[in-house]
Length: 284
Ligand SMILES: [Zn+2]
Image (cartoon, rainbow, N blue to C red; front, side, top):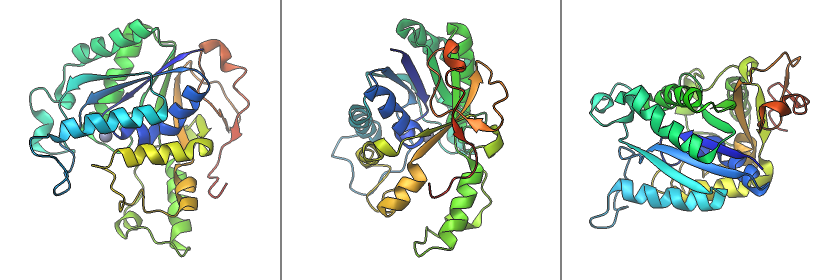
């Protein structure tokens, strides 16, 4: 059995980006460790959500604990940085915030957990943090350095398949179900082009767990949110797979095929090579 450490920026990121993969690994008996850089203090706060004297950080910590139970997380640790807020905000440079953290200091803290856990695998974000949030970009930078310090043999970047999202948008435009207007306008800059993605995990088996874990993050993903208001079949189409780019061991040419699971040790690279065909498989 392996130990797989997921490094995320804020409570709820683990569920949205990698929740199905975490549940899948936990169900197979692997140890799933979740390290969260911040408590998401600068998230939006719906009116009348918090109890008197309660902070958003406290609420999000209990939401994260509940999501972790649903997804089978064995250990959750914080790196104790402060949420940096969205790109361009004044909060990005505040002392103590993750985006402004000393790279070595943050990497050493994460590497300490990787070493303590003898974690075979580390999952971080792609170079632009999926969508450019400064804390997500910092997850990539700190994660890469920590993996080098700890000698973690297998490293993946969680991302989104940009071509898949573009195809979904087209599909939505032609269907009865209409996503919110603003999700249709802008060009897709999220994630990475399909050609970069090495690994696609089918998590449809765990889609109910993923949805329940999203619901657990009620302060950020309300029942009327875009995510949770999708019809069930649309939800499964959108959230039924999770994408990764293998950083190391460096993938060899795979004639366009994707791995169907994370490698759990560097030696399993060959056994894992026969994966799913790549491509925009909307509607599968
Ligand atoms: Zn986040």
